[in-house]
Length: 135
DNA sequence: CTTCTTACA
DNA sequence: TGTAAGTA
Image (cartoon, rainbow, N blue to C red):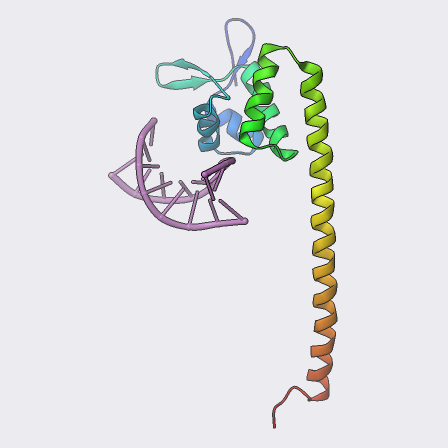
């Protein structure tokens, strides 16, 4: 992470990828989607602290279950600095619906687990009793 | 289809 | 870097 003339830090694509634990390809993917616009110096991309913040927003968005399109919209209003309230309300709604979704999945998984356990006991009992052997 | 990852040239 | 194939 090299400091720029202005005092702000700049990052290479590898710096950011390592920092956030993603690949350079993901960064290019987001760039193709117009969510990141790193400054170019020749071939190289140089990311500013602002880019880093945007990437964090993208990753946070992913974590709460936003689609790329939703994140794009979120970033748009973030950049425009308007609709901040609306923006946060939407994010909050997304968080709540995602929590509900994950809880439902957990319920479903727990039911599957219980069913598996039930069947496992039956089969284990058969094996132990020799009932499973066909003869 | 979406959202990347991996890999090759 | 473009592309293609694989993934979940």
